[in-house]
Length: 415
Image (cartoon, rainbow, N blue to C red; front, side, top):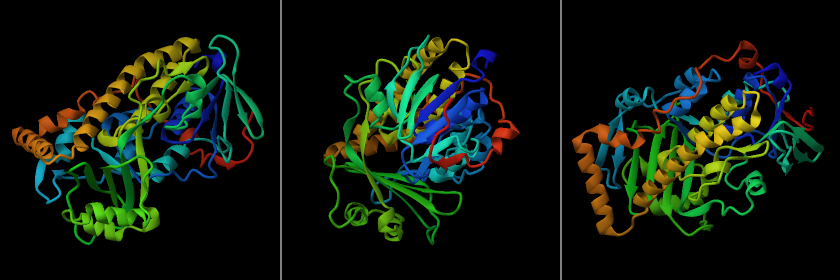
């Protein structure tokens, strides 16, 4: 960063994976950074997240990639099954790593949040501090303004990383329709290690799916999805709902459900942004992650794309012309994320098939493609998992890598 930008101040609204990654990357480029989080702690809502090679290469930029790769637990075969247990397609971790340059790494979201937040200095993340954008600023002049319970903060750059129902997005683009309900809901949980080992799998049924994946610490991450009305919830609890929907599926699904603690089964409707935004920025304010391009989880790319966003944003914000940098960020990220949103929606439509003939045809197609070779199945992730960041990777300095937890409650710093 040039000397004229040395004291520039960025405010990040939201302390999710993308927001924290942006904070670390900007700080390594010389920015002063304040992260505003309305929750009282950084304990993330969620269970597991799959980090593909594209986001791992992005994390290399802040010196975290190798640390994350060391958490990989999937070694060997896996694939897709039907509810009776028949394998529809087979993949192998080695084949995936060779094709895309790295393994798929399943981690608990809390682990990832902690690893990123530790690269920020004490006080950089302010929990219990909601932020409301009141002025997006102008790229060549007026600073942006964010209102907090303790007063307003002026910033050279504001980053809206406040999720699917982003208030920052609504302030920037009030006439955009925003995310729409995808037609299905999801469940997630983490359970203790099962008594018997299993191969990682995703199982597709009629309008539903189940996935079970191992974590490095021996626990298992399980996720499920099913076509359902928006806003629906089970009167007797979501664990009971999982038993009704998936309790007669192949092993280890019934055992995973039995081991789940009812209060740790999370249910969330899936919303996606089929209509892209006209841009990801306005003035001195920019969006990333779900705030910019909420997508169906069927390709497992939501968090991965947020991490990519953060690294690309920091790269383009490093120049002396912030307006040009934000325009370049929008131009680079909008087409890529819109493509992945559409691709995720197409996969979601396949998963959502409920008519028996259509489900049978889908399963037969998957089986036939698998028989022709695992490369055809992995090809789904071409142009996604092989992405590389726009700058040469570098290791984070010792000062940032060991800066401490970087979190406090109360008044954010003002610059």
